[in-house]
Length: 476
Image (cartoon, rainbow, N blue to C red; front, side, top):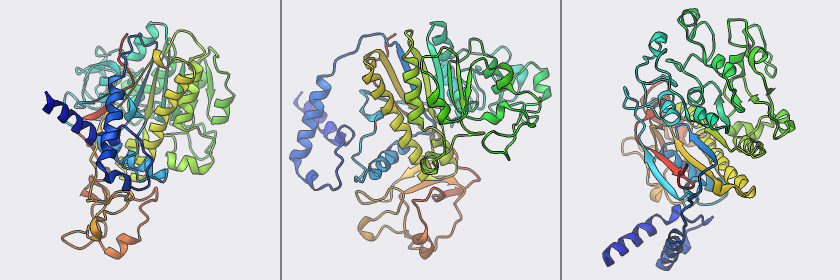
């Protein structure tokens, strides 16, 4: 029994940096054993004092970090701390403060390493499916309209609406993209976002299928709140974008879906969102970019009239709390994934930081309104990426930079410096390893491409398990 207690204490000590956010700028205080024992004691007392919440959750928020594998969480944690001027490694993310933590398998029924379409079907509909398919079970074959007609599955958003709850979707990607669309659409091909004549064409229409944008606006009952990007998918090619005059709509059916079908309020910038009267019963559709929303690194510096994920989260919760029936809200940090595919670590980690900020914002708003104990917040990912951190870097090393072990962290083959962040595959595998060139690169730039081991036009997903965190017990 004493051995078991000592082992438990050891595990708590080893994990303590995940439980207490010190905000330290140096680690001198950590040299003494008493520091770790004191932290362990506090953590154990907090765990033993935790009381089970047996109240049925009235409000449910599912946060989805697209492509947010464990290595992204670790690197993102360090990045978040270093943005604050801290060492970074002992920073505590919002999601790590949740009481219940675990891992989730991600495979599709036909693929070992999954995509975001079939994984969205899994976590939103409870059904694993074939790669590239959305809102259908495994009988649907990718790209085959006829195979999907009897394979439709309903989602947690459907279930919430049937119970009379308000429902909403927020994403930094297109609102018709793979992850959010599994909440409302049924297609055997994730690229059928619009009737563009290429991905989705007249043959598919004749077979009885409809594009994702069309399914969204004709849905009955409508989704109460939709905030994201992708407005060109709702407009005909003859229409120019309201914000970017050189960009046209994508539809060849000469239909403006918003004007023709959408029965609620439509907005396209943050000013309009802030002017929207909270508690208004009409549905709200906000599309802030022609395609995906801007990377947070760019948005925060541009001064554009585009909301952050944190602001959209705050807005949606405050709006839904004006009603009495409770709500379900899907919130996706969609561009973590896009930055990883481009092997742009600065963008990927800044997207993670803002995603984590949104998690914290949700908790604070619910707490301020006195309904946190009536709410279930779950944070997870759909898949990971072949993204790694390592290189024996010293404590507090710039997560975007080179390893620095005794200034000898260089390649055994050519003497070049070793990056802390690398990718297993991607577009920068054959770049120069010239030492002078490598030290001249600005790795803090949003345009910086991290090195990749194998050459590919785009980096791929990873197949390992992904993190899962819940603020409270799931009772309902």
